[in-house]
Image 1 (cartoon, one colour):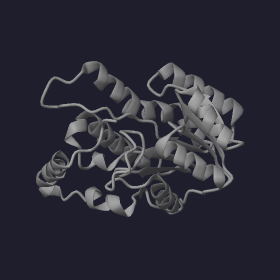
Image 2: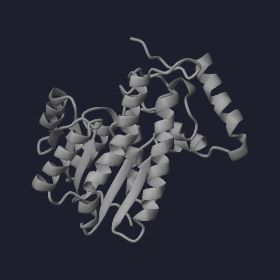
Image 3: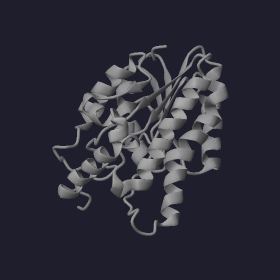
Length: 256
């Protein structure tokens, strides 16, 4: 079933910056009722002020109680909610050749994996009652070709991709569609907005992604992401080695 790009009530986690804000504004411009969520109230107020009619809910995606409270408010104040965009995520760097900071790893898993699972679980019965609904997961091409210096992050995205595949199957006889976007390196502040020529400009990514969301494709890929998505099976080890070696030789800018 094709997702309608207009006339929806859409909840977007992590909607105050980066890809989340880009998607929120693109949907808002198409006449959808958009509600964004995030931890930083001031930043969300800035986004909603720039987009009259857009709403915001303060929520911590890593906190189950915060998710439950947000879900209750959504079902009370926005009973026509029919699209959930699981976008919120964090991307700290790590070193899998050394001891991993346990608090960091737990925070990453709670945010990037358990957060979307819990958020969807809180809304799934509501969404199943809608005439048509969509659950959208923002994963990453790093789900298929991990970035070694973000080993835990890459693993959470691989796990979320797997979860989306299972959920899509389990919802096959309902009116709920599960879609996934797997961005390449997009020039946002997830790491550091740098203008690096290897990073896809945010506006170009959003435009190509919105076009894809209007199709029946279960997974929306911009063209620049396809080579990494087409991870060549038995050649995976060589591909991952070469991908990471290229980034060691030309590092991602992470400092100011």
